[in-house]
Length: 110
Length: 124
Image 1: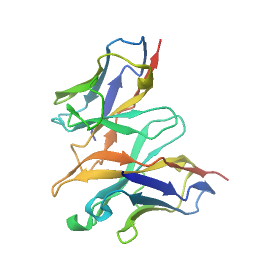
Image 2 (image 1 turned 90 degrees about the horizontal axis):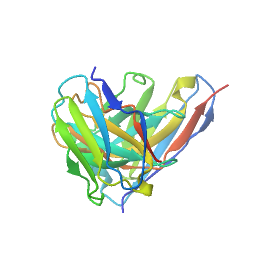
Image 3 (image 1 turned 45 degrees about the vertical axis):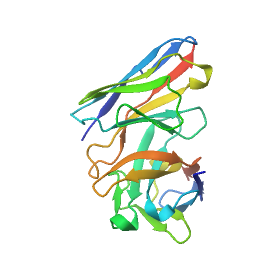
């Protein structure tokens, strides 16, 4: 089974800071990696697909990079509305393992 | 505008059954795979399963944790996806989200639209 890990599990940053979250897969998943944002009490929202492609309508301060086993999600300038939990998700081994999510990274404002 | 609205959640005793519905609008429902994802209270996201569009066979895939107990189906004439949950366990307690899935003929890729979720509580 492909395992996904994220670090850190939580972080606190100031408005305007650059925020970076890492996601690691237990085996090579090429670029089959998506990132989702879940604001408190809300449904998740797709932000980044195929590791580095910005979903339509998503602000350009969000970006993603990486391939293979190591991936990075970045918020270039943290805004108050970015308070959320961010999840990575792989889809390399469909249908056998389905969509596997990372444990999430909770981001809040310092 | 794409909308997904889940319904059917509630309190159910262990061992009993429950059926969730996901009513879709704003897109051609029959052209898309549909998936269910759940989130236990205070926990992360867990994929439950998905059903392909009829064009790709309308077949289903499930997470190991629910295989044999849960069944996903669809009614394209009504733009509704269903999640039939049997032999429910306390650990099935979660918010259940319906999602649209981007797929091709060879695989599926992203969960691009999500409903607001419906809470299922399994307790005696």
